[in-house]
Amino acid sequence: MKPEVLLMGPMYPPTMEALEQAFTLHKVAQAGDRGTFITSLADRVTAAATTSSRGMDLATMTMLPKLKLISHFGVGVDSVDVAAATERGIKVTNTPDVLTDDVADLALGLLLATVRRICAGDRYVRAGKWTAGSLPLTDTIQGKTLGIVGMGRIGRAIARRAEAFNLKIAYQGPNRKADVAYRYFADPVALAKEADFLVAACPGGEATRGLVSRAVLEALGPQGVFVNISRGSVADEPALVAALAEGRLGGAGLDVFAHEPRVPEALFEMDNVVLQPHVASATHPTRRAMGQLVVDNLAAFFAGKPLLTPYN
Ligand code: 8YV
Image 1 (cartoon, protein in one colour):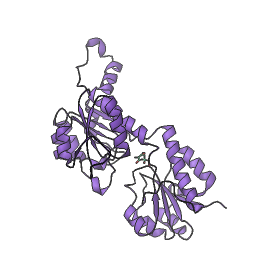
Image 2 (cartoon, rainbow, N blue to C red):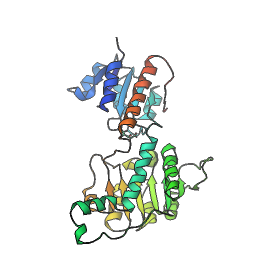
Image 3 (cartoon, rainbow, N blue to C red):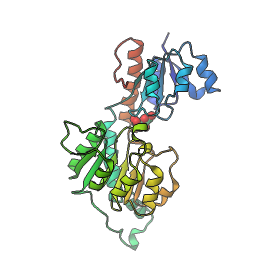
Image 4 (cartoon, rainbow, N blue to C red):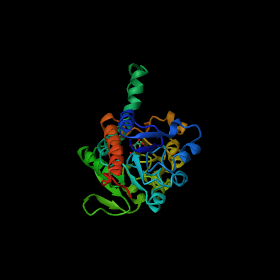
């Protein structure tokens, strides 16, 4: 008999296959009534697998009194009520490290694409407009200062890449990092004043909600560019859209939004904005590695072995 796992929502297809092979999956997505389905598994299910869009809230944990593990596909666990899980003795695992490089790559891609208007240039050529004249010149990233909000694994990987692009680096976070030589600012507004470009690379959740505030965007200024590969909740989205619309912010490269998959339509017409549908980790090798961690954490749990990537 294979161990039973509650699957909160669909995952990357190869991960689904690996999960199907190792476990008996109970798929919430295929259930008629979600509540009735989950409650019917209450005396059997000890482990669940979930994604950032499905998460795991307290109400669902309450329906599953035997739950002991939540294996989360993704490094950011802001959609899982980790405090409630910890209180109930439920372990949460995530997928760190394996996605760091792809996410950092997209951050630099968004910065370059926004500052150098790569997508606008592409649209210009495709529309046959080049024959009528050249595009206006753009700003450069050379010699500018990149402010990084969150100097964790991903922030550090962005900083390494930024150094290769001749950017100066400063950062903000809850604590100065003893092993990081870049300039530290405790205050995000102070960082934004110093920076030409700002990238959010911190975790989502209540601790960082609205951290990139109207005041931060104001400090970044009309030539400044904001890049977000963390969570939409980290920025004050209405303030961001207003700053861009009114020319108080120079541009934005955004992979994440407050209410995905909904994106403020005001952004669609802006050539100084580059938009992506939350794809920073969405490469086959990385998604495979993330899925493997989801499977391996579940397998370790059922084998009574230490979890590979415990979060709490
Ligand atoms: C995924 C992510 O899109 O890891 C994260 O925190 O945001 C992404 O890698 C998402 O988690 C998939 O559930």
